[in-house]
Length: 540
Image 1: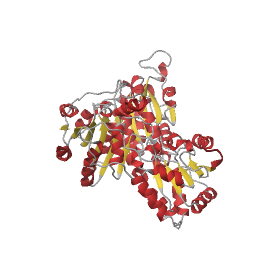
Image 2: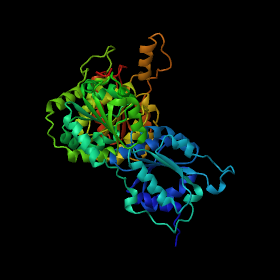
Image 3: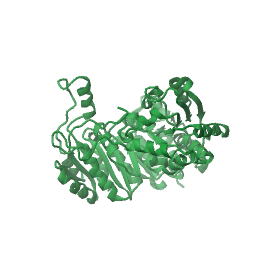
Image 4: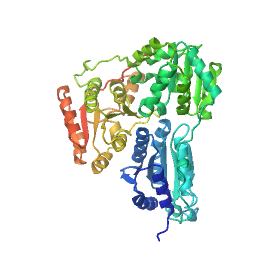
């Protein structure tokens, strides 16, 4: 009888937790886990860069509500993957980050790729630890999955020494199903009553949430909460905060509010640190957050204006507040006003570009026509200035953006994961020509995996966000280092097995997008656009 290795126990535990896919780049130390995935019937999506695997796990977690799993090899492989952990942490994505590791038995002796990886990832994750025994890997996975899913979701790292995954785990069983799920962190009934009463007493309350409570992840729960407490519920998930173009003139609503309930929304730079420049001095604040650090930050930034800080998971608190609310606040006019402010756009797809090129607004409008025609769709917005245009000009029931971290470059990886998570959906990823360069080789992954989607590049031959900073801060005679070339990304995608389109004339755009959708391939529509600054609203 074949013995059960640590790798087998690990893979079986992941399967018991509902894991069907691992995003990975292979390496010596993790090959036993690859082998174990065959019997556990877990698919491995093999990427071209370790960071891409983390981005894919991030997007997959956001779209499924399940743990997203990525796995890379030790030392240089783990180091290559670090950046996207920061993004996943701020996007509140439950990611299980598995790394190979040198054998425990060779610690200190100079083993191949020996490196203490735990300190390297600790600041970027909710939890980081090194597995110690083959028999303990089931318990290790359960601990990591629970931590990633619970409270404010986020990435957890487990280093896997080679002798642990190869070791004998025959004496261990897969953990029970209950150990592989999110732990609830409910709000106390007396605290829920105080919050409910405060909402009822307010004339212009706003409920602000972070990414985990956005409409892509919690649409029905958000709608139910808004109806029950008769107040606008607004997710904030952009690094531009109140300057997020997709929020239009929402800053005006914040300035009028008399009660702000931060339901898992950190009081940080995205809210102007809670200062009186963004909200009235007599506005009351309530913070519900699972992390003591964020509650402490709220006390620091708000002082006496913070009336209550509650330790609870925003998802559990939302259910309690929904159950407690009666929907009788008579605030239809206030809710409509906030909706109108968020919907406000100070640009039009018909606005001419000063140089006669296609405008970002016109490009976004053309993509929106494709989204509307598709039925079920996922829209992905990534990048600096063009990414902001895309956020303001497109919408779908499922949306992924690069998140509060402010990092760019994961959009192409998000597209692959989105198609894996939602195979029946049309996936559109809008990004700038700077952004697409980070993980361009993943077009080959998409072609190899037969994963069709449409990437739309707003190509202004520029790192436009930084270019705009230089223009504003230093003047047009002090521009340096932000120019890009007119590279034919569409031709390169064809060479990698995908479909390519090149568009310079607005009249050709709709047909090119339609051909890309109908190609059934990973498609790149490379569109030459005017390099305009991102649209602005009342937050600017």
